[in-house]
Length: 539
Image 1 (cartoon, helix red, strand yellow):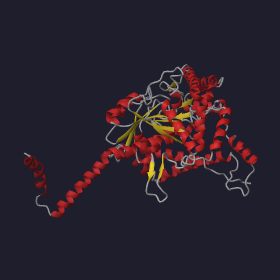
Image 2 (tube, rainbow, N blue to C red; image 1 turned 60 degrees about the vertical axis):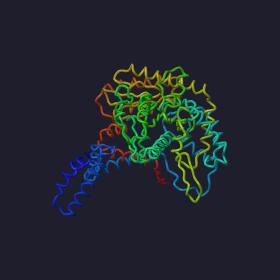
Image 3 (cartoon, rainbow, N blue to C red; image 1 turned 90 degrees about the horizontal axis):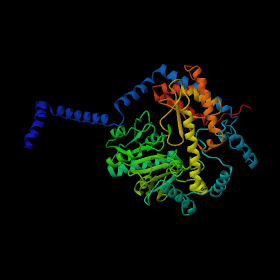
Image 4 (cartoon, rainbow, N blue to C red; image 1 turned 45 degrees about the vertical axis):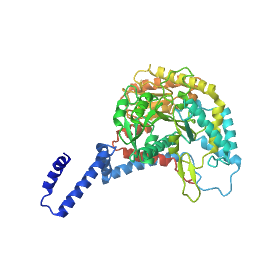
């Protein structure tokens, strides 16, 4: 029977190659094998053929001289604007002073530098950015940071106290997220590093345990861009799936369709950055259990709100380690944990995942080396300041601030829904309220509000703006002023709804219309470059 089946396969091949010279048979065989390998590589890539062809087309188009000249001209124009902005900050120090400055001179310069910005963030005119400000808390963390400013947990034997503080921050946070005795984690320098550490851990875990060498992650298109950054750092591929247009929550069916044999992690946001909505973490976790894939919950933005919302009297969908299948959570202490900047926590349901986050070198002449996160040396002062802040607020303090923030966010959402010609994206779950319009360019509204001193965040695909409500907005009259300003500026925009956006806000609209996203990326690099301009004095 087996022989008969083999003859059915080999017979046609024998007849096709009959009478051919040996070199021809070798050539045909080699070409066929190489062709099949090439075809397999072509079709097995996670990125679609359309996306690859589109990227290739635009790359070739940018080589056309006329196109190159146009792009260069636009980049030069953008850079000129950034240089002009930088020059308004006065001359820059570009050489180390021959003699050290006196302390009072240094402090005067620091005050001058910090006064360069014109947004009134202490008065609550900033979306996100600064989540809490209290002179007494500043005094506390400044003193604590000073005490621990030269400590480094890399030298655990020298500074065991700082290591104890970090361990306590991680354990307190894990407990707040309903982690059991196996839950563990580390502190990081921010949400991006926390996300990167989770991605590295799951990449290495999948490679070691499952033999996956072309890892991908499946995540909503609203997931934080730090996942894209992680993919670029760690040789992974992001498979983004759509969200429901009405709820702005991830489409679970689309997420399941995106899963394949190379998927090493699934991602859900609690909440997402653009719209402040929470994905269906329970449904994502069920997919993780079904396909044996780790599930990461990104709670970097609102993590230190959602863990207190029930105690503050608000209902919220399950999101933490109480959900079977959730294997890691990222949460920023330096947002609604109100700690100084440079502090976040990455948590795992089990040590097996945290071990894959670590980097260990055993053959270095300098000795056996191991580090838990990206950095080797880490700022013990930030760890101590984070610990001190959490101890200062306590559970009751966080619950009370959470209540004020969510009350304010819900009030703003309710009042904005009463304004004609704008709409709210989805149903905000925490502190972010996103605004859109079908009647005029929403970036006009952002520009008008900017003129009144408000600094909001711009969104794209579709166009929108959002306000991330912080404790700063709970000050008396701030929420009412914001709503009143939105109402008056919407009315102004509707006087001429077809009027195009002007000034810097026009860049956001134009950026969405450029089909070649690499060009938009070049413009973005110009902005990043501008942060490092050092304009020489002309005196």
